[in-house]
Amino acid sequence: MMLEGLLVDLVPLNKPFRELEHKWRNHVASWWASGGEWPITTKAALERQQAEWLEWKSNNEGVRGVPFGIQTKDGQPLGYFGINWIAEPHRLAMLGAKIGEPEYWGGGYGTDALLLLVDYAFDWLDIRKCWLMTTSMNDRVQRQMEKVGFMFEVRQRKGALAEGKWYDWLAYGLMREEWPGRAAMLEKLGLEARVKA
Ligand SMILES: CC(C)(COP(=O)(O)OP(=O)(O)OC[C@H]1O[C@@H](n2cnc3c(N)ncnc32)[C@H](O)[C@@H]1OP(=O)(O)O)[C@@H](O)C(=O)NCCC(=O)NCCS
Image (cartoon, rainbow, N blue to C red):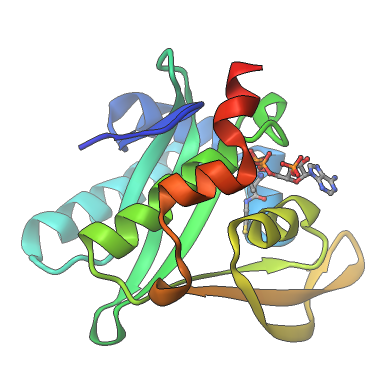
């Protein structure tokens, strides 16, 4: 399955993405994505994790998460974008994102992808709430949350240590009834006009 956006598409996390994951894991993008952690991941460890994930998937019918690869319209893999974890009884979807190519940060790619992902979660998976956590040092995510209409819900004070400084964990949430739909959001944010310009 592929979710088609204006600047990016969300596609199955197939081989080209799995091969690049080693580079992205060992990149500063991971520091941002984890809120200050950036451990060295060996290829062997990553292969083990990927094999465990595939095995889990083949042995289980439930949906634990829905990972997508994010790629440009001409097919360049940029990173991971997806639902990390679904709490099935509550229909809660925890989202996560990591664009591993920093020259694509701040250019609207992540927002385009987020609109696709949220629409998919509500419309296809019947999720009732999407949520995520970030840290107070991550201005890009905070700006994105504000743009896309997530509500700031929880501040866990000084829960993340990054380069010797303490930052707060921030949780954001969006209920299905608050979501006007992707088309309305594209219009509100003027994204089609921005892409054509
Ligand atoms: C988080 C991430 C997916 C967002 O995607 P993106 O393509 O960079 O986001 P967008 O460009 O759509 O939106 C970011 C907004 O922040 C703004 N921004 C960029 N740098 C900023 C900065 N240093 N301070 C404040 N705002 C900033 C952008 O201008 C944009 O707002 P605008 O559309 O009003 O101009 C991407 O940056 C990423 O993968 N970063 C590294 C990993 C990470 O942080 N993951 C998230 C963990 S919760």
